[in-house]
Length: 101
Image 1 (tube, rainbow, N blue to C red):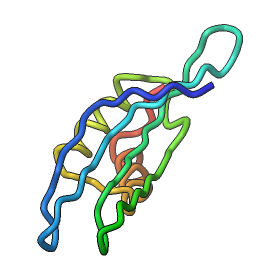
Image 2: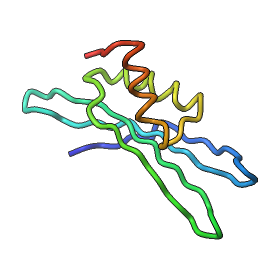
Image 3: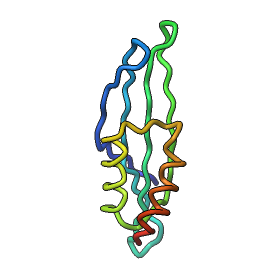
Image 4: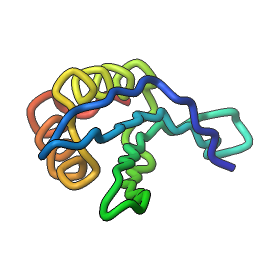
């Protein structure tokens, strides 16, 4: 079972409308030994033509280190990363910083 923890949210103005971004830490127990894997999710909410639209991107199992993924989420929040670019930026972050297990 995957647990979600809301790490933070922000509202940004884009093209005259507000967009809400929510950043989640994901935690999943991987084995009976109590080892957890951590990932992240970004959810975006915006109104288009009077309708609320939600999109999200999930990246499970980025690292065994909670702190590593929390640092990544913090950086993504600071730079208002959206679901559209999240996967590419995770790849760049891991390539630059290395895996932390």
